[in-house]
Amino acid sequence: MAKVDQKTLAKLLNLSRTTVSRCFTNHPKINPQTRARVFRLAAELGYDYSAPRNVQASQRTVRNTISVLVGAPAS
Image (tube, rainbow, N blue to C red; front, side, top):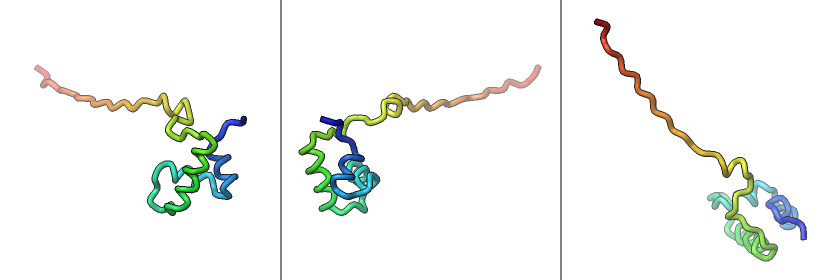
């Protein structure tokens, strides 16, 4: 069986891939009935929407750097 992705779900439901993606991120402008249709089909096809899609994106780390410059008066 081919790998199920958001593009596949969108095609089967006659929706845009963006709409399917927004269903999984709980976007406020997505109709609850549409979200339910997407979730239902995703469950039927075994789509795991909790797993990271892009390995590179999932491996990114956020690093916050704070620098402090301390000056001393010249003697």
